[in-house]
Length: 280
Image 1: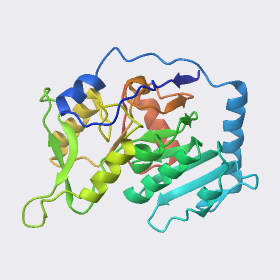
Image 2: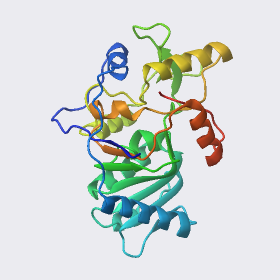
Image 3: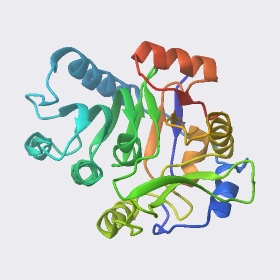
């Protein structure tokens, strides 16, 4: 069954809120149900774009001859070739299969995708910075069955992972902050912070924080920390029932996993080397 998530287009700008406010939002049981479904013609176009990228593009980036489909695979490095993106037709499809990437380059790619009003299609997986930026890059995103979108903590050389307090002590937020101490500079990266802030303006509502962490995910992250004695290096999903009240991109999920075991099977099938926490 195709799960479709329609996101409200109201005139709110991006703003950071406290972890407590985020906890109240992300755990709300009043999330609006999905509305509408893509037409059969739209689903056929998604399938056509996926078929091309799965069967004809061994390279990291490829633009179909009709300029309607762009395939991107692997990592987004600073050396990323943007020329095929400029060549994409308006209203085309960007099919991504991405591990992650450099933040500023990924944001530039996401902004180009939005300028083309392209639909993002997930081909197998979209992880870390792909989830944070490309997943919400444009007006529409399609996640086929057996494809995974998962978030994680992404920090640069001057940032350290930490837990920040919330109203629920059993569920602090896994976060990043400027490093302090002998090897830490103790200063935020203002350039990246400005890029992120500008990126999310117009794409999310006020209560969004990246990476998104539901109450259940935060509890699992804390549990892993308590068991390991160190910050967990894991990924996690974000249940589509939260999207409509937080992000503006209209997301079509063909089949969100129904359990941790189903998600584990998907991770195994995709041959991913990391564990992924299921957000119920």
